[in-house]
Amino acid sequence: MAAVAPALGTPEQIAKYEPVIGLEVHVQLGTNTKIFCSCPNEFGSAPNTNVCPVCLGMPGALPVLNHHAVELAIQASYALHCEVRNKSIFARKNYFYPDLPKGYQISQFDKPLSEFGWVDIVLEDGSAKRIGITRIHMEDDAGKNTHDGYKDSDTYSYVDLNRCGSPLTEIVSEPDMRSSEEAFQYLTELKLALQFVGVSSCDMEKGHLRCDANVSVRLKGTEPFGTKVEIKNLNSFRFLRQAIDFEIARQVGVLESGGRILQETRLYNADLGETFGMRSKEQAHDYRYFPEPDLVPLQISEEWKARVKAAMPELPANMRKRFIQDYGLKKYDAEVLTATRAVAEFYEAAAAASGDPKLAANWVTSDLFGLLKADGKEIEESPVTGERLGELVALVAKGELTGKLAKEVLPKMFTTGDSARAIMEREGLKAMNDTGEIERIIDQIVAANPKQVEQYKGGKTTVIGFFVGQVMKASRGQANPATVTEILSKKLA
Ligand code: ADP
Ligand code: ZN
Ligand code: MG
Image 1 (cartoon, protein in one colour):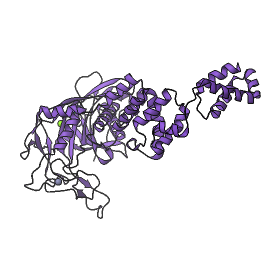
Image 2 (cartoon, helix red, strand yellow):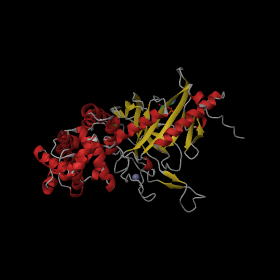
Image 3 (cartoon, helix red, strand yellow):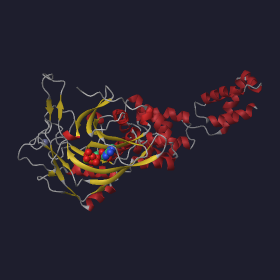
Image 4 (cartoon, helix red, strand yellow):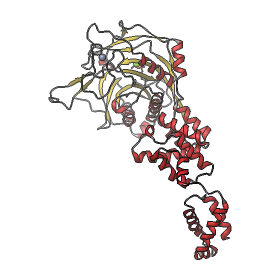
């Protein structure tokens, strides 16, 4: 008879404990071919079409390390502030499973590619924290067992080996996180940095980023860590949070009812919102790691490291800081404008051409994003370049175009691909900076609306809005509303 699980910890009980969390993140490197053979590294092909003797583990087939995979793994290391070892060793991690025809995974064990990294996170309350990265190592991926969707799926499982040999890095954090929110922020920042650098698409739906969470709890104020449980395969940010929070409550419940935590591997069932035991420490694999005899040690020269380091783009965290400090953007806008490298580069180009980075930020996040959204386009497909948008913003900043006119010009730039200047010249658009001309229009409008003038003089000053509207209309939006208001107030007084 299965033992009845103790109730989850109550909020009061949970408050007595401090969670300790460490993440192990697998990221698929965006190479064209697999890590040890030349099969395509591709998602979504017909099952078992991207395979060869090497990735199928045929006896005698020899692996050849993909140079590009190493290059990307070094980039990942630098994106996460790790030190890259001059010499790392591939090792065999032996286990039996139908999606692993070789009978072992080629990974790295005691001498990983890189170590001693970190990711800085910012929590919702604005406080900052540094999360350590223990190590990053390279390894090959396994295939996939498929249990549904095929003829006879009720009696058979199917194996697709296309993913066998896809290049992975495993990124192991220190047990530095103290809440599901910290874990969430860590994974968010890690993913963003790797996407920025171009190491991986990090597409979680395609399994290009997969996360295991190690969770334990200890009474607040106590030193030693509690026994940890590893929750496998959390394939969305939401599930990561939910699974960790559930697991904290479960462990507290066990401890508070006098039990002890079993060191085990658990899985998260998203439908039930619960984790359940998969295997205990006693049943854990003994992987019998040993150095891979078919691969020489991976030597990375100082020169190679220096070359990769020099070519690293600015990281999003730094960009965000710079946008806030140098450009005066709000935290939220800085985040939006560093959501992808393409957006950040677009904005930088716009900011530079505009001479007014703050105004440029508004134009990118509201007007341009609006047009892109309406057209179902990504920023990479924008018919208006960052520089062209910046030129438009510069015209507004210098008063050559009113904001209202610029909002008419931008959609035309969007459809024609022309510059703001070209459209202004073609359509005879320009801001009316000649106060004499504005005054002439104002005089006409005031003369034509004696009733409203009377109302204004009688104390109903809100009718000024009516006059401004009329003047803007008569000037075809070319008059500066601030100037119009100023002149009007004098004339009506
Ligand atoms: P294992 O030997 O089980 O692989 P490691 O020491 O290599 O364990 O750690 C694996 C992951 O678990 C790391 O991300 C680490 O930060 C985390 N971890 C280690 N100990 C704990 C703990 N007591 N509670 C939570 N996480 C932990
Ligand atoms: Zn192959
Ligand atoms: Mg380990």
